[in-house]
Image 1 (cartoon, one colour):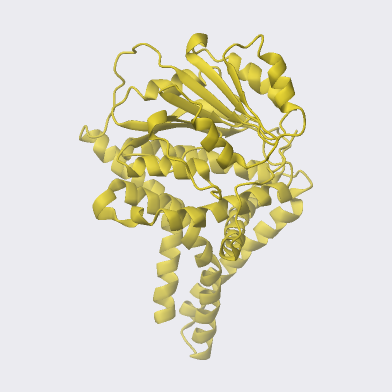
Image 2 (cartoon, rainbow, N blue to C red):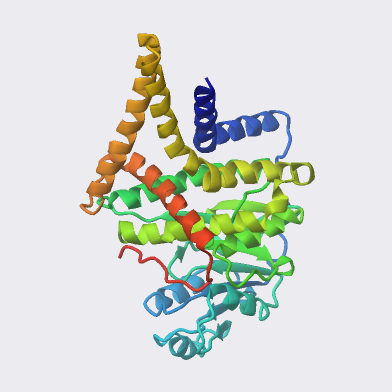
Length: 404
C-alpha cells in the first residue's frame, strides 16, 4: 500500500507540473475575469521614453550586419533609441566592423576589450554605460519584429511594471528534425503559460532573447550566473514589481543544429535552474510573496528540480508494485492494471528512443518526437543536476550552434 500511495503521489506531481498547473491557471484566470479582477488597461500613450538596446555579441561577426540593420529597422523614434553592442573578448573583427559603422549610425556605442570576461560581467559593465530609463536586452543571433521595441516599451505604461519580456519563436523549415519540432512545440506551450501567468500576477522568468527592464531596478548578478535573464527578472519580481509579457514583441531564432547542440544548451539551462533555485530560496515563502511563490514553484521549481527525478522513480515503483502483486497472488484485475501501467511507460520511452534514433535523419514522425523531446528535456535536467553538484560553474561558455 505504501508503494502504491507513493506512486500516485509522484504521478499526480508529474501530471500537475506538465498539465495540471496550466489547467488550474486557466481556471483561476477565467474566474478572475468573470469577477473583473486583474484586468489591466493601457493608459493613453504619452511621450516615448529613451531606450537603450543592449546586444551582447561574442565572436558574432556573421550575425552583426543583419542584427545592426534589424535594430535600425525598429519603428521606434530613432532619436529615442540608443544601441549598445558589447563585444568584449571578440577575436573575429567584430569591434573593428562596428567601429566602421559609427559614422552612419550616430546612436551606436561599442563596448569592447581584449579580455573575454563572459556575458554576465560584460552586461554588468554595460549597464554602467546606460543613461536611459529603460533598457532592452537581445541576442545577436535573433531577429526582432519591427514593432518589438515599441510594444515592449508600451507595457511600461501599466502600473507597477518593472520588466517586460517578449516572446521567443522558433523558425523552422518543414523538414526540421525532431529536436527542432519539439523545441517549437515546447515554446508554444510556454507562451500559453506566460500569457496566463502575466494575467494572474507576473511571469516567472524572462526570455533572454528579448526582455526589457527599468534601468534603475537592475541589480548586478554574480559573475558565475548561468541564467542571467531569469535571475534579473525574478529579483525584480521579488521586490514587488510585475514582469509583464508582450507576445507581439518577438525574437525569431533557428532551432539547434543537431541533438548534441541542443543537449549542450539544455544541460546548461538545467544547471542554471538548480543554481537559481539555490539563490532564490526566499521565494518559497508564500506568506510573503503570495502569487509569485505559487507561480514560481509550480511553473519553475517543480519542472526544473522535482519531476525529472519522479519519472525514473515511477517506472521503478511500478515494477516493484507489479512484482509484489504477483508474489502475493493478487487478483488478476489488480495485476492487469499495474501491468498496463508499466507497459504504458515502457511504450512511451520506446517511442522516445525511436524519436532519438530518427533525430539525425531529419524525420518528423509525430508519435515519436513529442515523447522524445519530453524525455530528452528531463534527461538533460538530470545531467544538469550532476553538473551543478560538481561545481566550478562559469558565466563564460560557448553557445550552441543553430541551424543555418
